Image 1 (cartoon, rainbow, N blue to C red):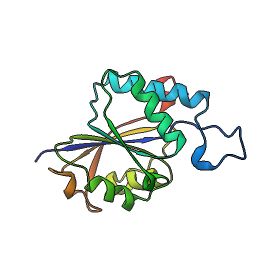
Image 2: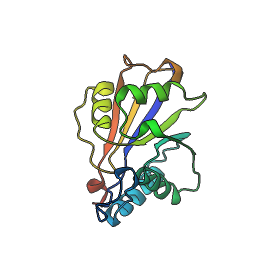
Image 3: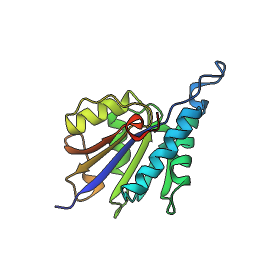
Length: 167
């Protein structure tokens, strides 16, 4: 059986400087921008090739995506989805089922608490996603259309910004 790789990236640390700003419109702060660039470098260092990015439409997720791929020589297609803004695991599954073949590695850039719940449902691992936390999950499925709430994944790696010198 072929495998698919799912990368879950929680947005980098956002700014709370403007209390009048709607949550959806909050940008990254300096620490978040640094962490996002470090995740971009990690993808290069680990030779992780991403075929497609599914990204929440929030300012902080869009900015995270922009910064992680700014250092890359190959940027994947990025599809922005309103439903990824504070998505539930079921909403993420529904989106992933729609991914066209032959995409092998898909990254989802989104938010908590959905990511904590989704990771636990998929892998059985209870890990709290820090901002700019990245999980690499191997899935034993041939096609994304087969992905469902019974799909089990193997957590291959989990990176925290502080472990990368980006905290």
